[in-house]
Length: 380
Image (cartoon, rainbow, N blue to C red):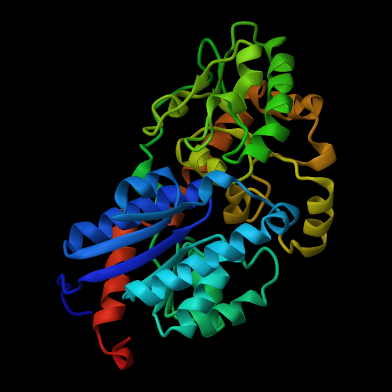
C-alpha cells in the first residue's frame, strides 16, 4: 500500500445504535479527524460520539433497545430517523457513510446510501455468524468494505466474496493490562455488570444483587460494586442504592481491573473482563417472546464472546430460566473456592489478548476507509 496522506475534506456520516458502538464510534471519529483535519463528521450515536462529532443528529444509543420486540414497537421512530438521514445525505452529500454494528437500523442506512451513490463502510460487524447468515449476501451488495474486529469474521466475509479487513479489536486501545496478582484479594472484590441498556439493567440487577447476597455468606467481608453504563441515569440503579451497594461510573477501568470476580451480562463487558483478567459468570435474560425467537435463530453454541473466541465453555453461562441467584452464586463459588480452577481461568483469559490483534484499531480503520476512497477502485 502506498504511504497514506491526508487528502479528504467534506463530510462523513457515522451511525451507531448502542452504548458499545457509541464508544467505538467516538474513537473512530477522533482518529478520522486527527489524520484528516479538514474532514467534518455528522453522527448518530450517543454521548461519546456527541463529544467528538461536528454535528450530532440523534442520540440512538441511549434508547437502549434489544431483541426483536422492542425495535418493532419503535418502528415509527426508526422510520422518521431514516427519512431524516436520507434528507441529510441528499443535502450534505457525505463522502462516505460508516455504520457501526446495529444491523437492523444500519441496514436501512446502507440502502439509503446505496440509492444515493454514497460509498458505505461497516466498522464492527453485526453478529451475522450467530444468526441469519443470509445477511452476508445483503451486506455484499451494500458495503464498499467491512472492517472487522475478530479474526474469524475476516475469514467468513472473504470466503463469501465480501471485501473485508481485520483491523484488530478497539478494546486493546482502551483497556489497561491486567494487574499482577496472586490469588483472591482480601477482602474479595466482586463486580456486578448488569448491562448497558435499560431493559438489561431492569432484568439483571435484582438477580445480580440477590446472587451477591448469597456469596456474602461465604465471604462476609466481600466488597461489591455495581458498574453503571454512561448512557443510563442513576435512577436505573435504584435497587443497588437500596441494597447499600455503591454504583461506579468510570472510563479508565481503574476499579474494574481490581476485581477478583464479576457477575456480568453478556455483551462487550465480558470481553472487557477477559482483557482485564477478571474471571466471571455470564448471565443473560430476555423477554420470553424474544428468547423464543432467539432460540430458533441463534446458530452458535455460546453467547459470551470469551467462549466464542475460545470455542469452548471457558466461563460459565446461565441463560433465561437457568439464571437464578442460587445457580449464579453456585457457579461463582465453583471457581472462587477452587484456587487451581480460578488461576487456570485467569491464564486462559490472558491468552485471548493476542488473538485480538494489536493496539491502534481506530486509526487503522480510519486510514483504510480514507485509502479506499482516494485510491482507484481497481487498486483495492
